[in-house]
Image (cartoon, rainbow, N blue to C red; front, side, top):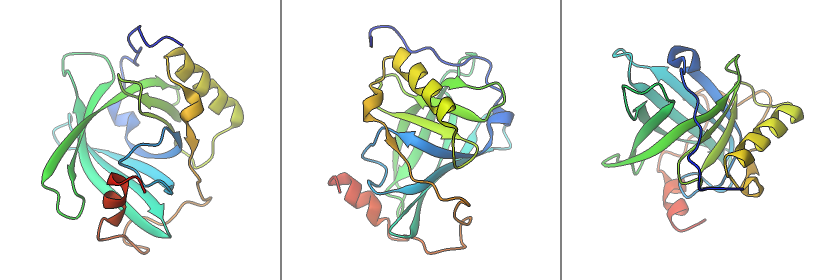
Amino acid sequence: MSTDKPLEVVTGLDVPRYMGRWYEIASIPNFFQPKNGENTRATYTLQEDGATVGVLNETWSGGKRSYIEGTAYKADPKSDEAKLKVKFYVPPFLPIIPVTGDYWVLYLDDEYQYVLVGEPRRKDLWILCRTTQMEPEVYDILLEKATEQGYDVSKLHKTPQADPPPPDAGEGPEDKKGLWWFKSLIGK
């Protein structure tokens, strides 16, 4: 598993086709997501300028919905590579501090049904799918592709997903205080 070579990313991403809801099937745990999160999903919406993507990341912890909203945009508008930057403002309850990260599409099937997303340090990795469940064979293919890119897939944690998924925003209890964000800072 070599991390010396640069990551290979998708080229020619059809951004409008990529929009919509994606369910997190697995990820390498990180400090900015609740440790006990489930039903984690992302919804992407192309903005009027045709270059900016609205990002809504949601997860459920203790039966309550937590979320953060942000934007994504191409890191280099002239490049054909699917290297994006994502920007969120934290803390979620008083969004004043901008936090920017990398969102690189490492693999995407031809039908835009599942995707492998990472970043150049190989510390964060997500396996996303248009549905709440993924066929084991597809999951194994994505693990293989991540390994080829130099990721330690033993760090991946499968994300519990309900079927059917939870309701959309405003239809259930929410963590309006952003407590998950504070807990994530201290490793809880």
